Amino acid sequence: MTRVPVGAIDCDVHVSVPGMAALLPYMSQAWREMIVTRGTDGLELASYPAGTPLATRPDWREGERLAVVRREVLDGFGARAAILNCLHGGQAVHSEDLARALCQAVNDWLVEEWLDKDERFRASIVVPAQNPGYAAAEIDRCAKDKRFVQVQLLASNEIMLGRKYYWPIYEAAARHGLPVGIHGGSAYRHAPTSVGWPSHYLQDYVSHTMGLESALLSLMAEGVFNHVPDLRVVLIESGVSWLPGFLWRAIKSWRGLRGETPWFTTSPADLVRRHVRLTAQPFDAPGAEEVQKILAHIDCDEMLLFATDFPHWHFDGQDALPPGMPEALIRKMAVDNPLATYPRLKETLA
Ligand code: ZN
Image (cartoon, rainbow, N blue to C red; front, side):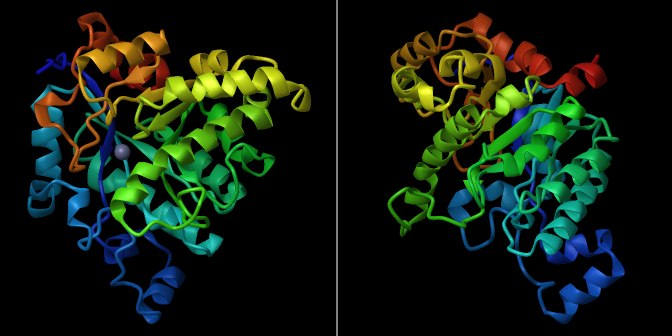
């Protein structure tokens, strides 16, 4: 077991809205009536619904959630802070107005039910990417609270994330010094694989790296980092082991084809080093030798961020770090890199 240093910052912890009814107090009278009248107040639009027990650890389902997160994540690691990422159907529903109402309610719920309950919690702003203007306004609204340290997007949306349609979101994030966290996941406008719809959770989960690879290349090729040079992107729950192979192919093809994107003048490897960070859970490598090879290929000790990804079933408890990691890198992943990636952490934890 590799020891996580005391004072670590956990960059991916999930909380889940217990049900639509929990959001009603954070919605306008008109939306409350609409949701109840439509009979949708019993819906479970949050991540980890009861019907997918494999998605999370059973103790999280059964226990009092604030107490379980405190015990397993904060006290369990002696963590200095944990960034809460709340995956919610508000980021996937088709109505952009309902999406806005839901995302606003989720963010207000996060403040009252989590951020106000423990000073070590930080959170990502859940935004309705269905309408980038609404998303930018939600970023401006929530950014007043310094405990929001990131903007949260799903990897797969209506269209690819690099398209100019989404640029108001990146501009708003940069305006407030917030990284954009792209979490593995989909609004399911398209099949999560490039060849069709899968039948099982196994296929769905494994296929998410394809979505993240495509989103990352889209950001580079469409010129997002030229347009917003200060933008920092964090790929969350993306796995890590795919990155060297992906970059090799991206660089090789970019060298031959960059004439079609004259603004794309910096190598994908350099763009990723400058603008992109990855949470290191799950790492997706079987043993110490393979982990060390992947680290050698990445060749940058500033890329990785410590995360437990609690309460996923692949949460490894105290064994949250991949095997074979050098002590100096662990210290950087757990403390230095998160502080460098999230300006608001540095500001509020100092
Ligand atoms: Zn996650």
